[in-house]
Amino acid sequence: MQMFSVYVTGTDTGIGKTLASSGLLHALRGHGLRAIGMKPVASGCELREGQWRNADALALLAASTPKPAYADLNPYALPSPLAPELAAGDAGIEVSLQRLLDAHARLAAKADALVVEGVGGWAAPLSSTLMQADFVHALRIPVVLVVGMRLGCLNHALLSARAITADGVHLAGWIASHVDPGMERVQDNLRMLHDRLPAPCWGVLPHVNAPDPAQMAMRLRIPMLAE
Ligand SMILES: Nc1ncnc2c1ncn2[C@@H]1O[C@H](COP(=O)(O)OP(=O)(O)OP(=O)(O)O)[C@@H](O)[C@H]1O
Ligand SMILES: [Mg+2]
Image (cartoon, rainbow, N blue to C red):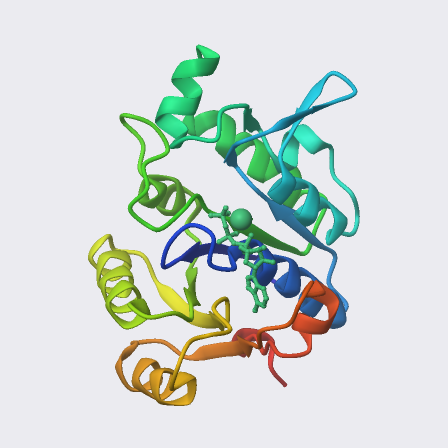
């Protein structure tokens, strides 16, 4: 089987990318695949035993089998909780596309499937000269858009889909995550997303307290693996 790798972007920061990515890793494993996550660039880290560690990267590591080296899963662990360009500046480094591609290749050598979680929303830059679209182009992989279900999500979802397509990247699907338990008319909003987004829905993650990625996997259906 051809290597499965997908880039997970979202309508914004804090809307369920890590949850959806971890759920996808469990779903892929349910298809008998060795599935590894990647958080190429993470800003906001804690020191653990003298090493900078990011919560998203650790969540993806926990959902990955086999377990890769942390530095391959998360080649850039930037301490400051800022946009990557600023966080990298604080750390005195610049994000290099080649280093990201090398880490992705090392992960790919260990797995049948990779799930790469992006940074913030689609147009969040990785550096002053590197957009997420550049990385995804170089990898030649499709994108899945996580839509955080809250007021304003239609605008964010449709703009994101338009930008992804305009960047010449294939939008393979979208996943809704019910982040805001107070959102009204969720079903109507989901219908409007179904009607307007130019890609299939891979699943809807309900709102639950302390969501469990393995449970969320049961809500996901990856069209290219179906049947
Ligand atoms: N369906 C859901 N039900 C309950 N809580 C959710 C759901 N989706 C996301 N959350 C919660 O919302 C918060 C943000 O989710 P998550 O960390 O997955 O977002 P993200 O898009 O990866 O954020 P970042 O941009 O920081 O990477 C987390 O606390 C997560 O548990
Ligand atoms: Mg995240």
